[in-house]
Length: 68
Image (cartoon, rainbow, N blue to C red; front, side, top):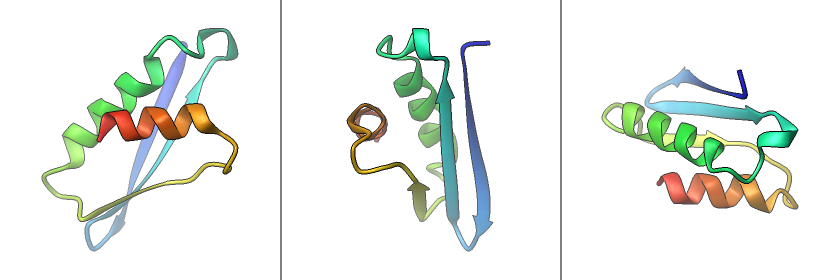
């Protein structure tokens, strides 16, 4: 396994998402593909998707924006 994504339903159409990718697999598009899969899957029932990260984590922010 090189990566995992977890999307949790919080209620009232809100989801929270977390992605972890093994260090030596960063920058290969895996996180972007996982995020896109999750967004496509929950788009029908979600009114909001919350993804937490640190402000300096530009790579995951870019991956999440690409998935939208």
